[in-house]
Each structure stands twice: as C-alpha cells, then as structure tokens.
Amino acid sequence: MSSLRRIPLLVVLAVLLAATGVAATLRHPTNPSTLPNGLSVSINAESTALYCTGLSSASPGRISFFNTANAARKLSVSVVSDLGRTWTGTIELAAHAGQVVQPKVVDAPASHRSKSGRVTTVAVNYGVAVQISGGGVVADEIQGNSAVPCVSQGVTRWYAAGFNTLVGSDAYLSLYNPTGTEAVLNVSAVGATGFSAPQNLQGVSVPAHAQEEIDLGRNVVNTTNVAIGVKVLRGSLAIVGEEDSVGTLSFNQGVQAPQTHAWFPAVTTANGATAEIRLSNPNNKIAHVSLDVTLGNYKIAPQTTTLGPFTTGDITITPNSAIPVAGYASVSLHSDVPVVAGLATGTGTWIALSSPQTPSSSYVVRDFTGLGFDAASVTNTSSHSVTVHVTTYAAKGQVVVTRGINVAGGATVTLSSLISSPLTRPAGTYLVTSSRRSAIVTLTLPSHPRGLYVVAPLDGR
Image (tube, rainbow, N blue to C red; front, side, top):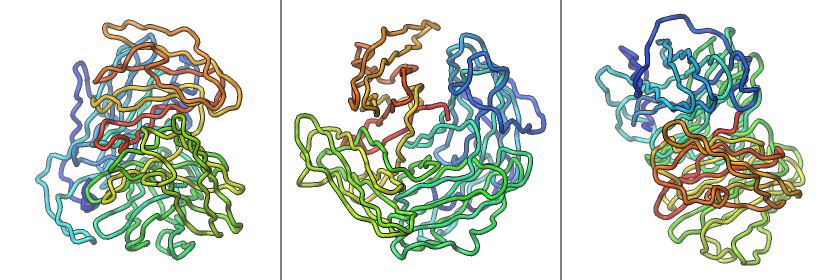
C-alpha cells in the first residue's frame, strides 16, 4: 500500500465483480449495524451483516465472500470511498460458493511525495457494508499478502500494539461507521515517550456510513512499537490498523480490551526471520509479562519482561539464543495486569503485524489469497480436552464432515491431521468447530523464510 493513497483524488468509483452471475442495482445504503454475521447466529437467521474497511485501490484490494449455508443468499453491498462517493449493488451467492468484490479507482493515477519522502501513486480508500438475507456468509478482505476478516458489528473500544512510524514506514487507522448517525472517537497512543492523547485526535467525527483514515505518523513521529487505543464516545466503528513497513502492507485487526492471557500458536523460528511479541501496558501499574514457548521436544525457559505504567516493550522470539531454529513455536502470554500484545514478523528490514485472536468455537478457513497455506493449526487454549469437527467444502458442492477428534488441553494440532489429508495449494474451504469456545485457528501464508505472513481465519466476529 502506498502511503500516498491518503491524498483525495477520485473521479469515479467503479466496482468490478470478479465472479459470474452478479447483477448490480442502485439504491441508498441501509443501516444494518445491529445484525450479527453468519457464524455467530443460527443459519436460519432472517438477516445478517458484514462490514469491511482498510482496503484501497492499490494492488488492488478485494473482498472475498463464502456461503457456508445450504441455501443461496442475496447480498446487498454498499461501497463508500474516503471522498464520500458511493456504489450499491446486489450479489446472488449460491450455497457453498464464493464470489469476489473488487472496488477499483478508474481515474488517472497521480503522484505525491509522502512525509517519509517517497514519491508514489495516489490510491483511494473505502469501506463496505453488506446486508445478507440469512446466516452462514463470511468475508475476508485481502491486499497483497495481508488479509483480515470483515466484522459483524462496530466496536466502542479498540487496541493494537506494534506499529512503526519510522522513516520509510507509515501506520494508519481505517475507520468505517456502519450506523446511520455520526460517530465520535478519541485516539490515544503509548510509545517510547509514554502516553499521549494528541489534541487533533480527540473528538474526531466520522459521518454516518462513511470511511475515514487517520495517519498515525503525523502525531507519533518516527517511532517504533507504537500502541494505539480508540474509545468511541458515540456510536460504533469498524476499525482496522494498517502498517506499511518499507512497502510491505499488513492489517492489524486489534482487540477490544487489554488481556492477561493471549496466544500466538505459529511464531516462526526460521533462519533469516525476525519475530517479536510487541507489548504495551496501558495501565498505571507495573506489568510483569511472561511468555511460555512450546517448540517440539525442546524445553525452553519462560521469556519475561517488566513494563512500567504507560510504556511499551517487546520480547524477541527469533533470533534468540534460548530458542532453537526448529519450525513454528507456540507462544502463550501471561501478565498480572491486562496488556496489549501483537506479533511483528519480518526479515529485519521490514515487519508485518498481526494481533492475538479471541478463542471461539467456530472458524472458516478458506484460501482467499489463492496462495495456499504454509501452516494451518488448531490450538485448544483450555486445560480440558475438546472435540473438534471439520467440514470440508469440496468441488461441485460436496460437503464432507470429519468424525469428532479430541484435542488435549493446551495442545496444538495441524488442520491436515484433523482431515487426515495434506492441504492442497491452492487450499480448499473448511469449517472448524469446537465443543468449547476455547479454540484458536492460526494460518500463515507461504514465504521465505517461513512464517512471515500470519493471517486470521474467519471467526464470526
């Protein structure tokens, strides 16, 4: 993503529907903000909704839908650019089928010099609202090697750690207001100089059904490991963090509250890779943080750090002389006070950010990028065993359900072991369900070294 995509230049907003059988009809956006999405309600729900933000016309970005239901669904799609241009249309999504929506700017590109000195092509940002005639539909937004799930409702609190605003990197908050009334928010930051609440980021308003971008680097200049907190004072917002690290884009879906426990089940230890757990303490108390690292048969001492009030820090997993080079490590975090954590992976010259997931009981795993997966794992975060089922959506509408498989407390298993088959490339589509809300599914895309791009599955949020 270009840092100059923030410069407003839009003559036409067109939407290319990269699938057959798609008909578009013009209409005014609706306000389905209170409707949950397909994985969090009954498949027989009369109406559900999804919201996506963070994409731009660069690359270009796209949204990929998949219908897990046994019946077709009608999708009413509303797209809005950061200049207020809108498009609305409909999609007929067959049972167990997927389609792609690709918003794209068709005006001539323009160049601009960013605050970091780079001259790049201007791009346009947008938000998307989708009202669906029933349950079972999920969606992912993809740009390059970055992907993040669309959400079923806005939030009033949002936190993320690990942003860089160093020269050559840019960080942003992408905000979409899914409601019919104006939203108002405050943004705070925790960085090397402690806590800050920039005056121009207090009382920020986002109009109804509008998309806005906040350039974090304009307020927290040339800083590494910046943590952000958002408090929505009125209304609710769909929020995605964006990191453009020396040209490598990553999406950070964030968390709704600081945590005393968090899990990162697929952290690379490959030669040539870097991996850090980046931390922020948003409290007025000292935080004692410990990471338990599980890696094959190796016995690894807990990795620890202490964070003062309103400070940031990190713990390096790779390279670390205490942690062998041996594939993927499973890392669990424990803290005596709630903290914000994120995983930063890269090569030492750039980073890609990802946030910890909240344990759930259902996930859709779909190869939205078309690249396949380097790793796909299921972790049971509880101390009790759980029963996991996997539904495979095969070609020609065929559905195959695995038998129930027990996963021990604290264990991480591969998705291929659950389906008793190696994952293909490109991979299929799978619905993973657990008997408890204690499961986490973790995915990484192919890269060299391994494990640089961690992407989230669709978890029904």
